[in-house]
Image 1 (spheres, rainbow, N blue to C red):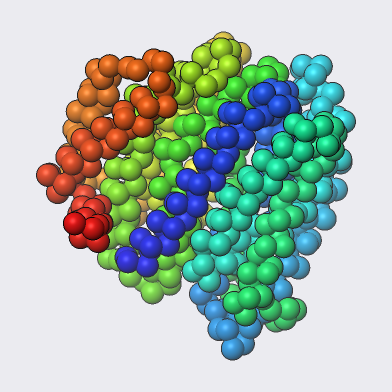
Image 2 (image 1 turned 120 degrees about the vertical axis):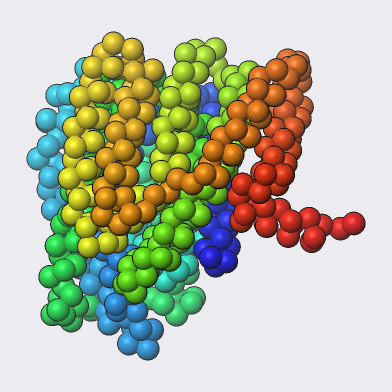
Length: 495
């Protein structure tokens, strides 16, 4: 558990730094430098690319984590596993590029707003370029995660990519590039991840060029192929469930609405950062535990991770709500419409966190096929709920649909996990965390506001809330690992 905690903490730190950089980009720079239309467009084209990336990866992302332990042998260059991934992804990429151009007229015909249609049609050809860079960068990311080295991939994706965007925004601000050149640079920003990971893997002597054709001949290949196929459609369902809100806002409303939604979603995403950080190392750990058939270890990890991540996620959500006035002080006036969006999206993130890594438990088990069925069902719910709620309530409707989808998805998956494995992420300690959270929230709601000094108010308010919340955890001993971490930190602090 110690290695998981260290890797998870390091990944979370990088993610938080990345979010801070992204906060500057999305909230302070994009709206005032390039405007809402470009912000909305860049996010929309990112989501289109992400959908095609699922096919480009041929479902090998999770396959890498699940089956790499069977091939891991540095002396044998892992039996060409990296080369195997390269050939499979190249085939998927070529198929995806063909599909991108075949579906062009269909995608464009769904867009109702003329400005949105102009941007998507004008730069549609960039999607294959973005897809190619993302396909191979993601391959190296999951390969590094399989090596139990998640921190470096997280560093490149969360920090380096966002700093690149900051640099491009600076170039645009000073007039050194125009709008078209900015979009071109944005499209190739993942080149930094690809080159950086190649250098990292080379530096640790894990970059092997063995062809990997022998993997196709192993007895495991059939299982890997079946798993990848299910993973492909499962990820497609998951992506639709999680990202259809932005794609449908793009098609049904306009890029300005997408931009506002993106900013609100960015703020709400902070709730899930601890969960995401630990997930980078939790996935290979679950894969190894299933390989070893160690169900007790899986149960222990499952509950412990859910409790810790829920505690961190809850205080972050409370902090966001308590700092609403400070957050909207730095945004344009029209962004005030997004307050309810943050509430719904933040709640949906918290729902995912409190349910633990139920998806990881399933996809690394022998019951991984159920993940496909559950994701397809929730994808249908997401499409239907987003369509009707966006038509009726716009931005808030999209956020409410996302929350509804996650509630249904987690309920279905959690029931399945308990029925088959008799494990749940919930514990009595969570009730103590919730009570402490409610007390912390009430304090935050009743604190006086320093309207003219929002920076001071934000810092002071956040410190007070953290002292109350984590002080409550220490007193009640509700979270043993967090309590031990705090005590260790106190011991290391100078007297």
